[in-house]
Length: 169
Ligand SMILES: C[S@@+](CC[C@H](N)C(=O)[O-])C[C@H]1O[C@@H](n2cnc3c(N)ncnc32)[C@H](O)[C@@H]1O
Image (cartoon, rainbow, N blue to C red; front, side):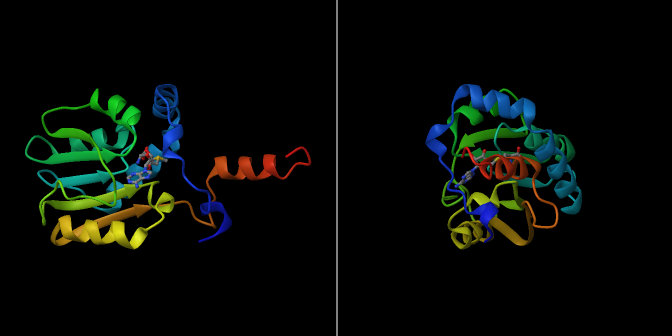
């Protein structure tokens, strides 16, 4: 893990205001997620779990791909983000407060696709999260993960690095 991903995540610092700002300012994450969804070849009638769904923009996009015979569930530990996401709920799309480390509310083999969009690098126990994914995936199911990379650093991290490297900080 490089310096960029060593930051400790503080879930207790989220607020309603941050959640609604994230919803407006997450075009980058949404764009990455659309690429990930294409790579996963998500198709009509599939069952999909979005782990760390945030405010649910991408989850909603995927619900439109799987259509009314499919089903998409988004989970996130941040209640304020799930509250925003729930405004996007529709018959084939629902959201719950939940954590990557505990998918016990889902049956084994429940999903065709499980994915983490811009989430996996925040997880301190990635093996545990992956074991949970494997359990809830049906045989032959697909896992998708998008994270920042050294070759294509995430712009806000670059800004943070340059600010924190100034003498004042
Ligand atoms: C950068 S946001 C990405 C949100 C969404 N996937 C998107 O594409 O817009 C990272 C998300 O990871 C979530 N997260 C952090 N730790 C998590 C965990 N242990 N399990 C599930 N999600 C987690 C955060 O609450 C946050 O909503």
